[in-house]
Image 1 (cartoon, one colour):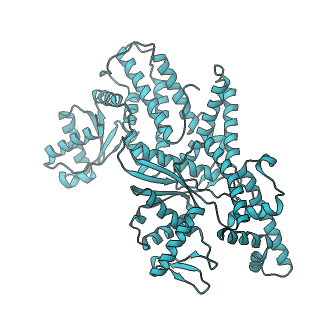
Image 2: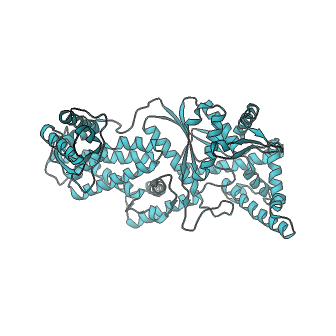
Length: 591
């Protein structure tokens, strides 16, 4: 039974009988918590057909429903809002219909396709806290689209070339003395990141020395020997110089192995990897084509630009005067290649921080000017930065919160708190270790995903790990409690069907919340906001705990009520698990 459809049909019938017109649309919303009822009809838009004031319209519809409908037992009118109290039999029918669905809330494959890009790191440093929000957000959006029936292609573009890569290479060549991940004991991505920081230190010193010798600051920044070496390496790389390419392959190989370890711990995966080193040439071809067609123009120094001033933007360089490409060049090539590889995708989603909003406006506009109709189907999933109490992170200065270190800290904190509560006495070592990881990573993911993606956020590790409050562990604990109830319920006499009983308000509210799950999944996917499903899971867990505290399950004498409460508990547990799975969070059987 689709409760929303039933209510719309009955309310439409009431309007037809009373006003002679069945409205095409009815505005129904959840009832405000301070009033009795579950659904509220907003009557202000209906005054056009009722020819009455909003409150009178609500009163008339309410009186008709209580006299003619088996669905609505009581109403209350608050100004132009009609609050509906539904019959217990309706709630039981709704619960029975939910129980009959094998995979409740999940849409079967529709044939629609979408691509979601996330992570997309530079190969000159390890992943950090900002990458965690990026990966968890992109992976979750992909998971939400899978839940509503889409075939999702999860991809990333690995920024494996460019001046930033050459900076690490230059520093390693100058100061590395042949150091490797094996000789240093460092993960490969951390070793390369170490030399990115070393480059910045050496560069700043050289610039200061030049300035002190009388060279102007702007010229000093160009003439610093280590920067000249990095720029020369970039030029040699594009010319396919053997020594430079071999060094690049070696150091990138170190980084990839390090990244793979981090992704495995994060629990994120990709269906296809794109590499800037392979897509930038296609981008250069497209830029030169656009130059021939008059879409772009060449300046006197030989650089190629696009003029977007007529579109309210500015001029943007696409090829430098020495012929080397920029980020925009490779992004043009990557977008084109992806639509060639996956021609059926309806949309390409880029999960990238909001500091790149202008970049993507320019990219999508350039693609449209090049004649690609699908440019309008490209979407920038912009998200806010993650701050720490100590301030903004800076990779060049080595002041980032390393992703590996943070995940390890969260797991360690989960272990400390769980041991303190004495909740692992019956677990073996492997079970306990799995539980610590589940809680620690669940706390981290939930904290980063419960906030609207567009908002900048402050990460508080201590707050995120608590068993009480708006946290992942609170929801995980609720699921474990429900699983304990279901294990005990296996000993209870089975009832063939849930039959009508006098329901408690807590039971009605839980059933009502379950009916919202399919629409919440769809809303969270189409809004690109895992926060919507994260907060739904929290609200459902909170509501269940209130039910559990107020209403006995096994102490109840009525077998029909026991059966309803067991079935309701089981379905709540299932929906919590599915909701958390879309966030990439596992929930324990016991805790």
